[in-house]
Image (cartoon, rainbow, N blue to C red):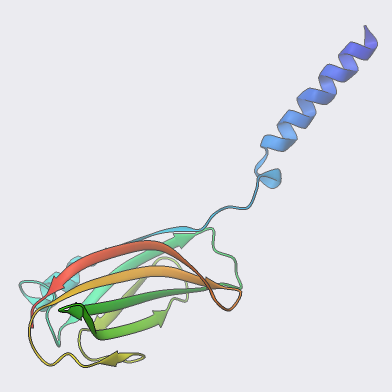
Length: 141
């Protein structure tokens, strides 16, 4: 009877330990990204060339050594006309991009409407990219 009790107790303790957060597997990174309501106010009727567009980003489960970034890419007729990226220094963060006027990227956007997307992502190990969230939007030219 004593052996059964010891075995049952051992199984119960093991089950508690395995279900404990300290013994859980690695947490997968996740995040959210949304266009700020202030961005809509700044641009008037919505995002537009030459106007500031802001994005609220938050994330969790990211390793300290990984880099977290937000990028904006705009396209016309299947070609990229604007791209810019910035690193985040914490969560939550709000980042701003002036559409068509990059700080860290490139632009050949001269006029006309564009289809755009903003991505929240991590870069780990130098080259592994993990996308956490995406927002798509149209921008007036």
